[in-house]
Amino acid sequence: MNYGEDYRYIPATSVRSGEGVEVAPDLYCHTVQIVNIAFVGAPDGDSFVLVDAGMPQSANAIIEAAENRFGAGKRPSAILLTHGHFDHVGAIIELIEHWKVPVYAHKLELPYLTGQKSYLEPDPSVEGGLVAKLSGYFPSEPIDLGRHVQPLPDDGTVPFLPDFHWIATPGHTEGHVSFFREADRALLAGDAFVAVRQEYLYKVITQQFEISGPPRYFTPDWKQAKASVRLLEALHPLAAITGHGRPAAGEELIEGLKKLADHFEELAIPDHGKYVEV
Image 1 (cartoon, helix red, strand yellow):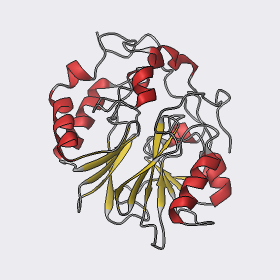
Image 2: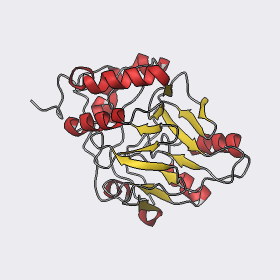
Image 3: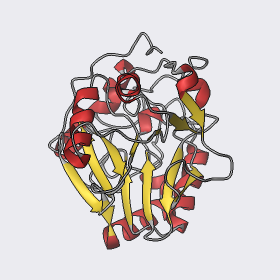
Image 4: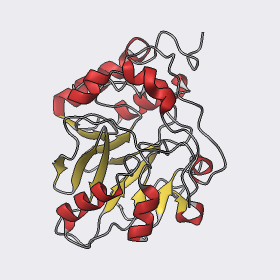
């Protein structure tokens, strides 16, 4: 296994880094610098899974968060990936080596996780603030997990999480997925939509809450991104952990997601950028 040659520590953080929020008794959001991971499973239960794998060089922080939540020496049954961008797989190799667990992702995402394809480069020219302008320095080369990553089942079931199903939510990446539990309408949305304007440094640092479209500088297909937001809004989620920003629930989620779905062109799609249709 290996990371892309451009993988490096990214010196970015936020006021929520290192903090966790219990969204449900078996659903926990933990922030690693500027990105969220999620633990699914009751602290007193027999098993749990990790969703996404944080920033580069964050493995020790993720292992510590897992042990604080579930107990010393505990390990997940699997790691699920919403997608393979650097801030969602930054510690994946170290976690696989430490925990010896399988990884699952959408089959369309596998080429980016097995060294076969590179993501389109970030777009520093896109409309937005300082984070967008600095995005050209973010890693975009593929990592290679080899046989350690497997495709999610075609039938929508989620390994080790029988109450959840996965939903294809492309746009931000080709094989992006979200995870949804009908029983309590809990949603793990990845970067299909986020809860902070990820292009603006001040808002990222302060974690200023706002239901927003996927990060502009790393989203190449806005037609699919719009369709994915509308698909998720139609599920009427009552609680959501997104890839960036604090968890959302209740009316702020319902109203914010409906507004985003209804006005996606104005609120999410940038006025200019190399991946914006003209």
